[in-house]
Amino acid sequence: MSNENEKVQVLIIGSGPAGYTAAIYAARANLKPVLYQGLQPGGQLTITTEVENYPGYADGVMGPKMMMDFEEQAKRMGADIRWGMATKVDLSSQPFKVEIDEEKWIEANAIIISTGASAKWLGIPKEEQLATTGGGVSACAVCDGAFFKGKEVAIVGAGDTACEEAIYLSKMCSTVHMLIRSEKMRASKIMQDRVLATSNIKVYWNTVIDEIVAEERIQSLNVKNNGSGNIENIPVSALFVAIGHQPNSDIFKPLINMDETGYILTQPGTSKTNIEGVFAAGDVQDKTYRQAVTAAGSGCMAALDAERYLSEKGLH
Image 1 (cartoon, one colour):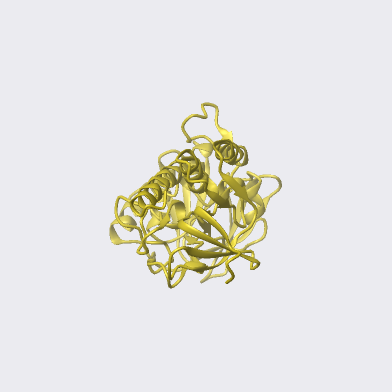
Image 2: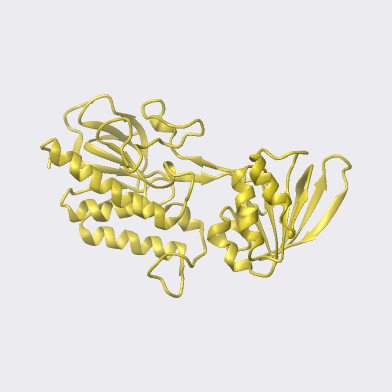
């Protein structure tokens, strides 16, 4: 690596509510942050239609519009927002070194990782198209369940998250059809018991989706019983896919401590990772809440933690 590398105080890897909020706070602290937006500028919210639960938007807001507002605010504060993605990192010594687009290296005194997580999909026709066009497919019941009050919906998944989301949906939807591909759930016993005790959750064992019946919006599901091969049609207004998320953390392995799924581990109550000067915010380190507002809050924490770190080291 030559001495011609660009040098920055704070490098933010990834956009979305966490990255942009970190950029707003870091810029206000005169840290001159540089943010690389990654593969999906704005993160998961750019494939979300309407957001009703973010404070300050009384009438709701479209996900892409909200992320444009975040980005514009960060730019107004003086953050340097750039296209491009981190392709390699060297965290072995200060300053840290990050390769961008396999072309150039940037040196940074502090790094904030806000690369987010990606929903896992079933991989069946129409699924992702309907998810990105507001057609009734979603990977977040808490985000989108309220749009289907009083209606019949389906959820796919067999873990604790799927059970939690099924119970959440049962409180506002008339019927929740829960599709489980094997004869048992992976969820904890207590969560299974809660699902089975909820009168308007109908559990389908050994069942997979054969086809999503939809034009612009989902109309029904053709589901197949793995044992008998029988196909049944279930009219639903929405399909929630709850088979997990994959944190976008691969380039940081094995340098940064993670759990078995790849979520970055941070010190409780902070955004600090196991490497001093490297911080993580948003869905890349949060498998519990995964909301825009919590991601933004952790982005704020990361910027404040980075500012304190740089001050203590005499780098700011």
